Image 1 (cartoon, rainbow, N blue to C red):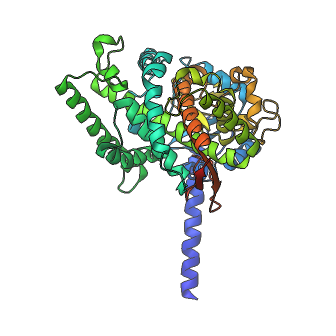
Image 2: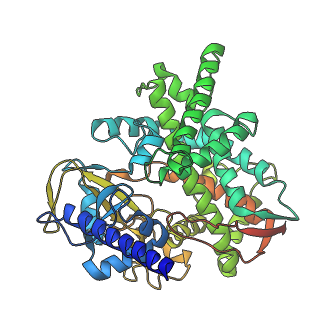
Image 3: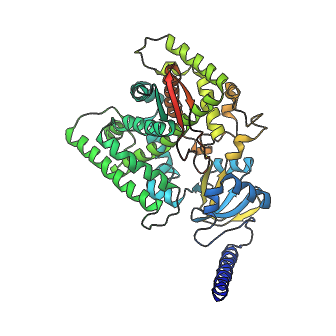
Length: 464
């Protein structure tokens, strides 16, 4: 009985402390003019609920407080906007009291010079440097031949095997990017690079708590290791004085490039390209394989289009830039996959001054989370939105509609969009013209905060 009483007293004490902390944190942010909402625990806020429950958390909060509410996620007081018109206004009005507001963990791990972190003239300069690396001319002359060569080799040994397509597309996206950026093949440096890069990716969406064993600490250390690897590559290139026709070579040839960057800026630019392209290419490729398996008519139409491209070539001929234009249905499959999988859930901005939005007063330094996920399932924009229907994208006007946030929005449209589409198109070309596949294992999928299969997505591959 004494033990029971002691446990009860401790439990009541903990409940009391918890309630007091929640009330205190709520009062702390109860400023006049703020939208309704809850702030959760001190320091942690509602990050756990946000990351674990994802869309369910957002729907519950909207049901209670409307489409514009306050919260505390990823270490910062945050306003969540789920209103399409307001989201478009926020994204189109950067520099009017709003700047990029990515989580501190992401800024720390991707670097101060990454394109997502800078704004104003610095953003224009860094974006210009990035666009010079992925221009149509660069894709045509340098990048697509590299991508084609890589894809042929990467997919060559899949016949008659059970593979984890999630793992294979992750490796594909990263190794292909390394080859485009620095001409690095599947050698010792790429094998050493992969585990560090995967730790870096996990660390970008974590609470910025620098303690041993945390995703944040591992991500920061991975960044340091990656910087050391690229510094060695840069030093070796300068010592050899050889000219390299890849992204790193172009960045290092300052005399040919109006965008003259320091080594720190070059490395952050490379990390940004790797990070942004990796997630988009790997996840879209994996989910395209999943959706094509589940929708045989879509696969049949895609295969027909790709076989028509291949029939005009010899077996050894690569996919070239001119082959991409007729791949209209392939492009539609990529857009529909991105819409259905919702790889990008939202965009963060930060206020640089106190400002009024939607009738509320937002304090300086607060984050605004432009939550775009549900726009992808809006029946007014996409009739029968839960149906995988690439044919809808054959109407080209859909790509230019005001609420298309699949590749970012406003002044922050993804600059690597066309390169990513070219890379995924090349992957799909070789995959569907060479192979058939079936799922094995009944693997489950998660779609928040990242699209992933926790235990892998296994398929049995056979020749077509």
